[in-house]
Amino acid sequence: MSESAGKSFLWNGRAVRFQPGETVAAALRRAGVTAFGSAAGGQQGRYFCGIGACQGCLVSPAEGMPFEACLTLARPGMVLGPVLPAEGPGA
Amino acid sequence: MSACDVLIVGGGPAGLAASVAAARAGLSVLLAEQRPRLGGAILRRALDGGPPRMAVPVRHLRAWERLEAERCRLGERIRLMCETVFLGVDGAGRFLLEDRAAGRVKAIRPRGVVFAVGAVERVLPRPGWELPGVLTAGGMQLGLKETGEIPDGSVLIAGSGPLPLVLAAQLVAAGRLPVAVLERGQPIGTGLRHPLLAARAMASWPHLIEGAAAMARLVRFGVPWHGGWAVRSVRQAGEGLEVHATDAAGRERLYHVRHLVLHDGLRPNVTGLPATEAAGVPVLRAGDCRDVLGADAAVLDGARAGELLVRRIADPAVPEGPLPAGLGAARRLQDAFTALCAFTAPPIPPETVLCRCEGRDRVTLDALGTDPGARTVRLIGRFGMGLCQGRFCADTVSEFGGFAPGALAGTAPRWPLRPVSVAALAALDVTDSDEPGVGQDAANGQSC
Image (cartoon, rainbow over all chains, first blue to last red; front, side, top):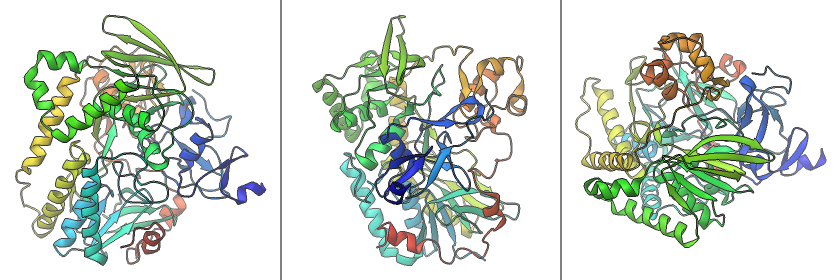
């Protein structure tokens, strides 16, 4: 956990580094994370439109509401995961 | 009761031009922007707040600098709220804005509102378009503007119109050669057969030079551009995507890439926005949010909307009046581009996901019977009921269902438009609006 104190957040328990001012989606994509885990209707969370319109890149913080990874700035120590738990309702 | 006369939603060229126009007339303006910084998609700043990390035509930068100088001159009359999204209008006629940074929802009652929330890309459904690794041209371009970086792996660009071509050239400039650019239409053949149409599409020197430079760069670096080719299906293959493309003659190509960029056009981003008024407050749309004409026209249109709103606030019956000549010319140019790149969309196979939000496919839609009507398609089929509210399926679903695209959304907007916590809604901040975002502006280097 100590590296999350610097410029990184946790994605599924893995530390992902980011640059100041960068969105969560940009950091995940640089880290090679294309699939953002379980989403509604058996879909995978993913980056698509980049402007908050498609709602496809929603991710869940450990506490609080899901948010669009493409709009939200990465902050040190964020603990993030898929918008649905892994065993969520499938298609 | 509200501390601002005018609410402008969207901090791109149109929103900023509208803010400046209203503030010049002496009204106080609240400018809400969903990103941490102003600029919109066209002038997406780099991470450090500097200019975009990618060549943006100089005329757009100049126009933006002029607007920013005006905003600074007008001082306190234009106040910014960044990282703030429009949620809807509540039963008491209050416009709800969520300040995401503070986790608070503000309720305000402006005397007039301009929405300038830009365009949304059109992407036609085909099997596999919902997979991770498939993204829009705008989505790819925004990342490039912010960081100057492209995620690792090969890129295929497919779709229609000027944006895929421009994006391809931008990727080349950033050091990544796309595998190919596939254009659905056949603009060169069409242009040769219809020289008048070609002449109309080339009537704007800045656009002509931009397009020619992009094409020249692709040729110079050997990036293939294929007219008349479309991506028909996509499947996951290992870490990447297997992309199947065909042309009108039935020839096939198979690509193996990491990223597939799709773009079949643009349309105004109007989902969930009131049209002309809400709770008795006059509402206008400006820029690409009214008509997708690009950034040059957005500056003109924003100023037009800002000035019109000032007059509507004084007298709601003021007619819209004719559009400035520059907007008419921009519309004719877009029409010519569209006609040049005209294409016939191939049939959509039954297993194709139409609703990206909830994975509803064509089989599900067909099971609703013939002519089910918009209400059944929405309430029983759940098309258009996902989080994007039909932005990416309404066109296709309405075509199959034989109703107007707008009908899928129903008669009343579905607010809130974005995910928001019940706690934030319950703790609604109605006193609001006296101290929006001052600290944020400074933090984002946007103070004057």
